[in-house]
Length: 361
Image 1 (tube, rainbow, N blue to C red):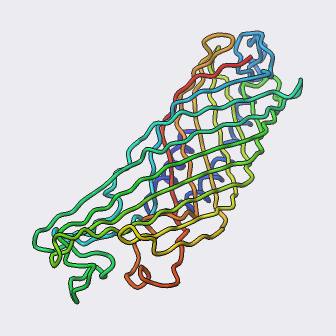
Image 2 (image 1 turned 30 degrees about the vertical axis):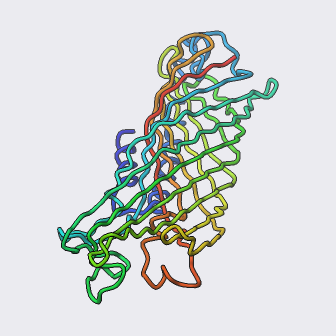
Image 3 (image 1 turned 90 degrees about the horizontal axis):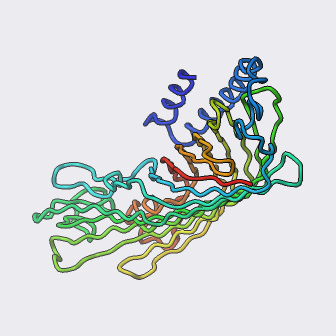
């Protein structure tokens, strides 16, 4: 188990790996962990099966609760951090450094999440829906040089020949982003009598909505009183089928660990709107395929017969997005082109802890 976690951490966070590479590595590791856990824990817990009043595989611990609750409601507080792969540079400053959008520290932000599930008759089948929205990422970074030593991406980071995009005294990057996530899934309980493990198979639909507004503001040495403003606004609406699995491992009376892994192949309808000094200069729409993968590890502790507390950590990665900064960190010729194009190959990771309560009847 420890070795698997270490290898997973290396493959997931190694800086040379793209999100697509991380996905191709993490999913096989998750599948192997799923198989080994099912085999190992099932074998180890056969001897303990008769000691559990509610069944070792039951998340209800010693209570004589039904194996399939008819209704459950889950409320959570999320903290998510947004990491964008391949941050582009916008200026070459007076410290002889390329200033990339990594200077925009997008810290953990909070959001509520609601999940409602209903059991279907007496079948080991559940219909579950969840939703959350987070809309308060708002960051900026500025550079100053009274001698006009700041050069921008639009001049190729060069001060010669003099153009309207170089020899800057002030340069500022601003970024505002928001995220929505909605799911509708059907969960199928896989009976494993006499085991500490309760697995579920998951099948459903996934929606991701991502919107970003990125701005680049600057003043030139030649025109110190004029503030120029460039901006790009992108939206990504992803909808597609989702498949996954859930492992509930009973570790103590009233306590169990939940590991969830799921992936969705979505159609992404992306739009990009570019503006110069407040006037729209370009608008492009495009459709493409995007992948959404999510892993969530959490600990449950049942307080009463109808309520449990939960705490965990989740990571979600999304590929092939129209990232606003990618659509503004372009050449001056593309910026002024009569035939604009959309850059929709961006990759993002959202990760962070969560805590909440679950009520069931």
